[in-house]
Length: 162
Image (cartoon, rainbow, N blue to C red):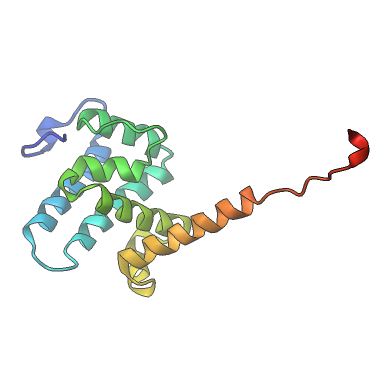
């Protein structure tokens, strides 16, 4: 379960740089705002904050390391090879639930693989059927890749070998 309470730069964990802590605070603030709003698409700003932090960390080649630190700091249950996006979402909005987390992670990973800039995320969602549409497209893409890589190789069978 994630720690609760007001986050500020005064409470910055020493393992985070000031810039990284600003990113984390922005995601927490967006999560807080998303929880307050009743609008259907209130979580889009939250997902934008998560994606922005992830893209910045990825560009700096610190996404996995930073996500593991976030996971330890906010007591996110460890997963083998957990996605940095998943860890950040579970740390900042744990009450959304696993199914919702999964949908958001797939949608954001699809945007990342599609090399969508942070500023273009909302337009990307709109063009691809929203978060659910992006998650569905990501799942289809993953399924196709698995089928392509796991297709059985024909085995030559010769009676003479026995």
